[in-house]
Image 1 (cartoon, rainbow, N blue to C red):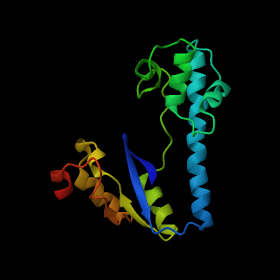
Image 2 (image 1 turned 90 degrees about the horizontal axis):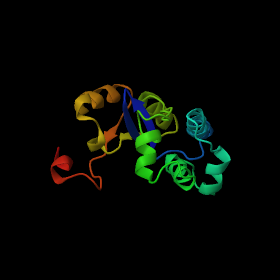
Image 3 (image 1 turned 135 degrees about the vertical axis):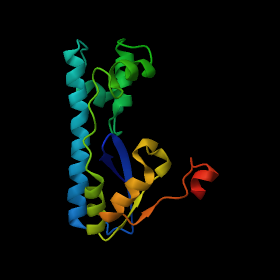
Length: 166
């Protein structure tokens, strides 16, 4: 599953039947992961600029071997006494639009689709019920089909029966 950015919306593209040994696939996945890992230090820099004194090493120590994300930063903010809850950490600093928010750098859906296709995979739009309805699900699907989208995930754990039927 590759995350991608469609305007202000995050889309997830599933890749079925990929060649997991494809070297270009591995290069692209590494690039996508590297972009993700650059986000967290940028959040820490913003927090430091706001007078919150924590380091990325503080966050890495708390996270251990886990993939570091904003919930780990929130836990450090709690432990250091800057906030009293994860909700407060996100509301004040970490959520979209908050003081230390840094958006994820994500590829365009066409890039994610191309990466999957190049590795011999079948690209499928994941959980369409998560999409912002103002974007127009059918419009998005038509445009993504034009760049190689091959399907849409129909059965998903949070879909209601009427969503699956649509």
